[in-house]
Image (cartoon, rainbow, N blue to C red; front, side, top):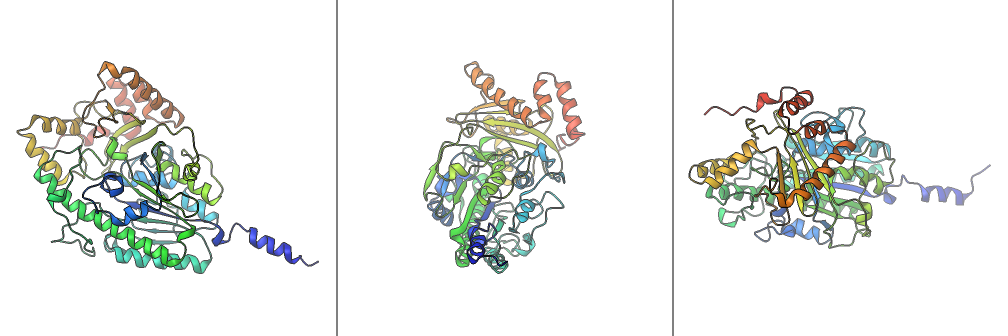
Amino acid sequence: MKTPLFAILFTILASPLLAADRPNILLFTADDLHAESLGVYGGKPEGLTPNLDAFAAQSMKFNRAHVNAAICAPCRAIIATGRYSHRSGAMGFMPAREDVPDIVTTLQAAGYHAGILGKVGHSTPKKSMKWDYAFDQQDLGNGRNPQIYYERAKTFLKECQDAGKPFYFMVNSHDPHRPYCNPEKLTKGAAMPSKVYTAEDVDVPGFLPDLPGVRAELATYMNSTRRLDDTFGKVMQALEESGQADNTLVLFITDNGIAVPFAKCNAWFHSTRSPLLVRWPGHIQPGSVDDQNFVSVVDFFPTFLDVTKAAVPEGLDGRSFLPLLKGEKQKGREYVFTQIDSKAGGAAVPMRCVQNENYGYIYNPFSNGQYYYRNNNEGKTMAAMNEAAKSDPAIQARVDLFRYRVPEEFYDLKNDPNCLHNLIDNPEYAAKIKELQGQLVAHMKATEDPMLAAFASRDDRTKVDEVLTATYGNWKAKGKKPKK
């Protein structure tokens, strides 16, 4: 018996596998970008990020977006798995467990073609997670050449069209990651930015002292930021030329804050705050702004599955924020939870943080008065601070806080987003501190965080050390102050 023609047509039209009927996803990430460098987030000088500012006018802008771990590889593992670091096993520069579902494999099973440009290793936390199309830093002009990104993007988008498949495309710029762009000594393969900046152009972030050495380094950071914007513009050009822009959900974020002291690789406000611009023609109101809801990268996996209608695996920690993109309300977005476990080189410096619209609480179980914190993001900025600290007690106090921390920190983020004044011992804030501690404990219990035991024993240094040793091994070994 022949199948009726109308039944055949219905089957074809209703098929969820038709690429034209299924939204594409393009996730573009910057590398070590200060959120407030973007003009649309109040960045100065005006015009530093013209392509991103123009994109923002077509998008929804989130003002309370964060990454959950302010280090490149752990952050990207959270994006890939939809789980907090201790729930996937990727507690630093280490793989996630193979039994943990990932976004690429999940979308491929739903018929998607998966591509990536740049940061491939950091964005691939499992050996079994295989991209269909991948080019890394060395094939992208050291990850700093907008024209090459454009050409690679065009090739991938054409490949998807030829295959008749929707796509998941993760485009990772290596800008503005160090080494910052010095026009007099360009990194091999890198392109010049479309505009170059000087120390006089710099607007020093409030968490850093305004010193000549700081300004000089931040000028080169701005050059890298401008080149990032150039790269974003070229990738958007490739998308427009492919004819698929109207059916593509595009998101722009950074993987963590700027690579200077008091930002990247920490848990302060400017460590984890990310720009989040989301465009989806016909679904998102252009130029709209969300000032109310906390959204973080752990929410991306479930959101992408909600958008694509792909099957949802068990064990995701995040929640879809598709209702927010549609302009609807969503409860339970009053807090964001962020963390650090171990950093580049394997040193364990566990931090746990919870923030709401007004306040932020941080627990630093590694801080014992002797552990000497350091990272590979200090550069000329820290050198300038160290020199100034010799004659400026206030800067010396900042350096000491950066190096040794204190076990607990509490900040009035509304009035002190730069986290300059720790209010943990101020009795006026006792109730607020207790509230955020309670939220953090509830989160740690829900996600089976091994640092819960340390927090519960935080007044007993011996027990805290035992918990850290059981979790991270010989964690104290890399916390010795270097000899002069």
